[in-house]
Amino acid sequence: MFGTKKTEEEHEVLDTIIGEKTVITGKIEAKGNLRIDGSIVGDLNIDGDVTIGYSGKIKGQVICNNLIIAGCLEGNIIAKEQLRIASSGKLIGDINVKSFVVDEDAIFIGKSIMKDSAKLKLEASKKIESPKRAKAAESI
Image (cartoon, rainbow, N blue to C red; front, side, top):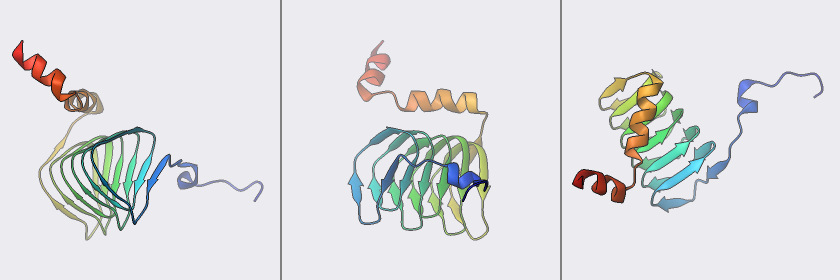
């Protein structure tokens, strides 16, 4: 109660939770922290942290600050800070991260590139560029 210290996890604020029985198809862009226990088919561009719970499944590209995978992700990742695959996690895709942690029994199939966060932020901003803007830039 009073006078007890809170752990680091208790300070974490979740802005959005996608429940276990929820299926989303399409691109998601958000600011803040996101937890996924349901299924997503589409790309995620999150200005914050993403946690994929045990029942969570994503098929698409993920761009975020920190990412924890306890479920399944099939797609490429740009994590500006840390990517952690928990022991129950499965990742099939290439990663571009600053820091990478793989727990025992986790599955990772793909290539990894580790860069400093300044380069990752630049690459992430280029990837989120709208298709119309990218086509216009190509024609110049």
